Each structure stands twice: as C-alpha cells, then as structure tokens.
Length: 82
Image 1: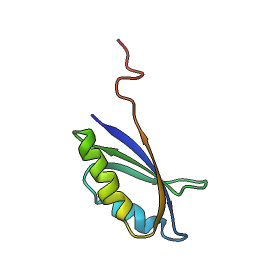
Image 2: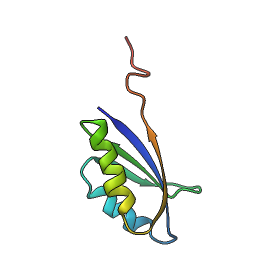
Image 3: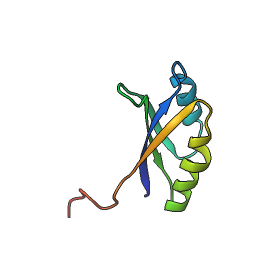
C-alpha cells in the first residue's frame, strides 16, 4: 500500500487547527505535533500512488496556515522479512 510521511511547517499558533483538518482527510492515518523546525508529522496511505499524490497535493497542501511541506514516500518492500 503506498504510504508517505508528510512533514509540515505551519504558521505559529496554528498547529492544532492544521492537525484537526488533517485528521478529517481520507487517507490520513495520523497527524502528530513534533518539536523542531517542522510542527507536524502526518502519515498518509492510499490504494495507489496516484491517489496518494492527489491527497498530498490536492488536499493537504491546500489547508490554510500551512507554510511548507516535505514528503517522504516509503519504499515498498524494504525491511520486510523473507
């Protein structure tokens, strides 16, 4: 299953607004507040890579108060035992 972690930098004092909106999106499995330059780490899963891209570019990046994102796509099949 295509999976990505989206690391999000948002406007000051808007972290919880963004997290609430993320958790309402289909495909978003988790959204957590973190310390550092980025405020949020979000896990996204979908049935296809195309759908994953639509969620990230068409939904997540359009949430108000998000300044920037970095997407880390999981390499499928890595780390699985044989």
